[in-house]
Amino acid sequence: MLLILVVINIGLIGGTKQSVQAAASFEKATFMVAPVLPADNIGGKQRGYFNLKLAAKQQKTVQVRLMNPTPHPVVVHSRIVDATTTDNGTLDYIGTHQIDQKLLSTPGSQWVTVNKKVTLAPHEERLLPVTIKAPTRQFEGQKALAINLTANQINAKRAVKNQYTYALGLVLNGHQTSQKQRESLKLAQIKTRLTPTKRQPAISVKINNPSPYYHLNTTLTMSLTNQRWSLIQYHKPRTKVKIAPNSGFYNDLLLGGKRLVPGVYRLKVTVNEGSRKYQMKHYVQISNQQARFINRHNYVYLKYRNLIIIGILLVILGIASLIYWWKGNKNAKTHS
Image 1 (spheres, rainbow, N blue to C red):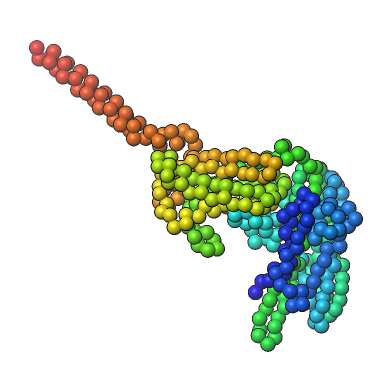
Image 2: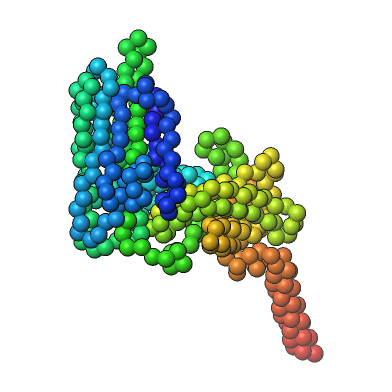
């Protein structure tokens, strides 16, 4: 059984209060951890995670305090993961989702090294060094990472093996740009599916964050309106959405028991980030089993398809009538 003992919720990097969530009590922990925050940690030492400025070619070493409160040896496994975004806009710091290399071509995890395995003696306390080596060229924005520390606890009486994992946030900051200069969210894909967790029917839209910056406390309002029957609509606002830098996720528009009506729809996604608000629009063709983006020319064709088909048939019929008339006149002149 996997227990995520501490997950750093890097939801408020801009200077507001940072929270740390615990999913199990420390008394039952196989081991405990605490970041040793350096003096230049952005936001100060009250943060529960590393938030570091990193210049080109710069090398830094930070430390994590490991503590074994048990009378038994504990083996701690370490790894560095790149933060991603889960469905419907939550942050993932434990590596359950693979990174999208098209969005994150240079993962920050390749700049960080840590001992993959540490054995703690009973009641031992030790500092684990984490080394960060910046690339030769200055990078833009933020690299969102986490130091994952995992150990197993075996209950001899029940033969149950529990796995405890800590995820300590590690944010690397390069050259910063203004919010107006940063790329907006992008619509990437649409499909119909059963949601992975609750298996609910939904229209799911892939939203990409191509920018190397967090989108935090964002409100996403997504709506689909049938272009023939405007009363047929699917609508869903979602608040407190958090999106990791250079990552994508599926935002679900649950059908809520409604029948999926095939046709051409207008998709509108409104993004509200407080000081910045914008909309993304796209035409969508939905069948009984799938949904896909179409461009405006496709939409115009589908909208007037029947008229176009009738027009083409009339043209063909007219040409056939002219040919028939011409041949009839030719035959009449030949036999006169």
